[in-house]
Image 1 (cartoon, rainbow, N blue to C red):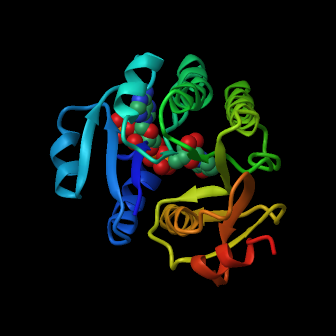
Image 2 (cartoon, protein in one colour):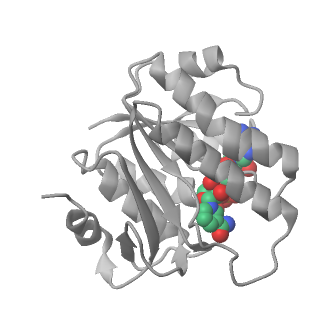
Length: 218
Ligand SMILES: NC(=O)c1ccc[n+]([C@@H]2O[C@H](COP(=O)([O-])OP(=O)(O)OC[C@H]3O[C@@H](n4cnc5c(N)ncnc54)[C@H](OP(=O)(O)O)[C@@H]3O)[C@@H](O)[C@H]2O)c1
């Protein structure tokens, strides 16, 4: 059982991760921006923590993280603009890293992006910026000295998924259901021996638990 702080708790991946972590006995606190989200989080068994990752200082985030063992960052600007992408996808995880270092939060699970995303289509400058900011956050976490797992999902689909995935250090690009991303993260959290790793993730044929077991280094 762990005390887990979720950034992105109300999102497509985050909201699907909540019941999977609750049923495993974890204790959750979820950051949320809008007051009306607090009741829904409470109803889902999560302690709501109001705040916007763009506005929170590292000190304020540090206060919120007190008592948490680990954090999941699955927030994203979702194409809402250049500066917001910088502030949320790039600076957000870095703020979390800085705050985690000052508290007992030992480990961060970071939802990043599959490096092949968009390669087969003309991409906008904004999309390239998004990719750069995701990479900036990944690099900061990998260099942070904290424990971490970085998850790089393919194109997210609004679906629960069947719990079957393909995961590895390098796999072919593909889609992945948001529920499958959540299932994979829940399995990773319950496999703490898997540490300081970066995994690509798509839908696949292997139950998420078996996929995570196969990633264990012997
Ligand atoms: N779209 C794709 O195909 C794709 C592919 C690979 C990776 N990803 C990444 O996967 C992750 C999860 O995606 P998703 O589909 O779950 O995203 P989502 O549904 O758009 O949810 C984003 C979450 O971030 C929160 N958020 C946004 N701005 C925030 C802020 N300033 N302060 C605090 N929280 C904020 C949102 O809160 P609200 O409820 O208040 O909006 C929401 O909880 C993201 O990091 C995304 O970049 C996406």
